[in-house]
Length: 86
Image (tube, one colour):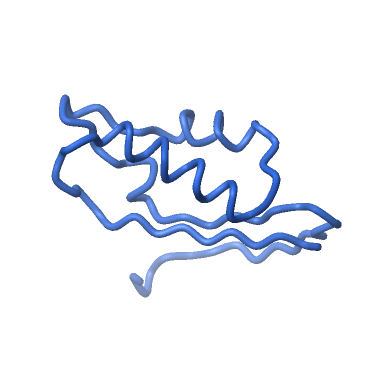
């Protein structure tokens, strides 16, 4: 982290069945063999589909990422965390 970076602190209420997801920029910046990024918009389109669980959501994103990058070498780390209120 850079010392000069500023962050805003916020609170949210997570209700039953809500899923909170965190991810690194390596997700939306994953490169396809043609150099095309995965993009935030593509990730949001996956998030709009109702997942059955946090693990289902992560698996769905992983499958889409795998299809997108195909056999391209990794361009960055890809880290995701999903938490679901039961």
